[in-house]
Amino acid sequence: MEMPSGLGDFDPTPNNLEAFWMPFTWNRGFKKDPMLLAEAQDMHYTTTEGKKVLDGTAGLWCCNAGHGRRKIVEAVQATVAKLDYAPSFQVSHPLPFELASRMTNMLSGDYDHVFFCNSGSEAVDSALKIALAYHRVRGDAARTRLIGRERGYHGTGFGGISVGGIVKNRMFWGPLINGVDHLPHTFNLEKQAYSKGQPEWGAHLADELERIVTLHDASTIAAVIVEPVAGSTGVLLPPKGYLKRLREICDKHGILLIFDEVITGFGRLGSSFATEHFDVQPDLITCAKGLTNGTIPMGGVICRKGIYDAFMDWADNTGNTIELFHGYTYTAHPVAAAAALATLDVYKEEGLFERAAELAPYWEDAVHGLKGTRHVIDLRNIGLIAGIELESRPGKPGARAYEAFRKAFDAGVMIRTTGDIIALSPPLIIEKSHIDQIFETIRTILTDLD
Ligand SMILES: Cc1ncc(COP(=O)(O)O)c(C=O)c1O
Image (tube, rainbow, N blue to C red; front, side, top):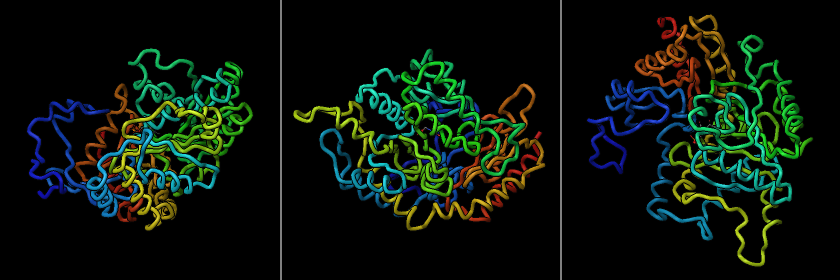
């Protein structure tokens, strides 16, 4: 099999799968019966056995322009040959300056700076740190509490798991960071089942923030962080009016609002970011994944006007004072920045965000066409995202969906599961025939599954 250039004589057939401790994986199951991907192009992966698999998940919600995109590959190749690495502590290189401008220009709100990092988890930690430090440099140092949400996923750093709301991601790591509280999640099967797009019921759940403010006092709260659409816990959509209400309550109490847009950024909802889609402007936006189309790790925090300024106003400018004591060796890595710039070109040249918006109604019909299929208890959709909730097997949560995932892979479609929910998020270049294939495959598998 021909391998991508750069791998030389690498033998793609592993003979020992033991040493790699795989993340968020049933390692023993995988190693008995591995699924190994060797190549990717456009909408498809090819396994090491030469089997084609349709990508129903854009990798891990990241390859929004599809795979093997020439322009991005060439940008990566050219940049690594020209400037393999440059630090961004006290010196830098031109690419992140252009990238940051282009990212802020993608938004209609008043966003004016971007802090770069290497992943969604780092973007979340960076945003939480910027929020805490922002209050402090403005002389409001008592604002140290962070408010997350049940069923939230914000990556796996200590900041992210502290504000996150997934028990298994939290329970092994002691008290986590101090002073965190959680909003209730917004999902209610009874009230919202089979909603097309945003559910009507649930905006009032934002008022729980008032309860939390009453408990702790606003003067102690730095920021609220939510995913505008919760992805990793099974596609939970914001009820109509919910995000606006959160914004209003944060404004009323001087609390920063952070949208974690690691999955909703870069066209997933049919607009550049969820902030555009929902017309709600948070103070900080985290992003990653689709920023480089998944090719090279990169994340970022997009800041609303006033955030960066607060640090500039605070720090002494007569010496050489660093304004923010935070950053990473690979912040704004040249190869990642080049991949991101090329990715933004592809999104724009091919009108992929508009394409996602145009396909969304067809996608919605396909998702809800599964109503009545065996085991299905709810269907959720927005943009090019779907959540298919299955009834769990008694005493075996997650087992049914995992089996569906495995069978779908064998049938040539990659889906993703979380608990007993199938989550879909295909590349935005998807064709209607691929959509039909994904849902037909799922229907057949569920019909035959115990
Ligand atoms: C909303 C959200 N935030 C943060 C992350 C973490 O990103 P990463 O895995 O790049 O650290 C994810 C990953 O899925 C995510 O969905």
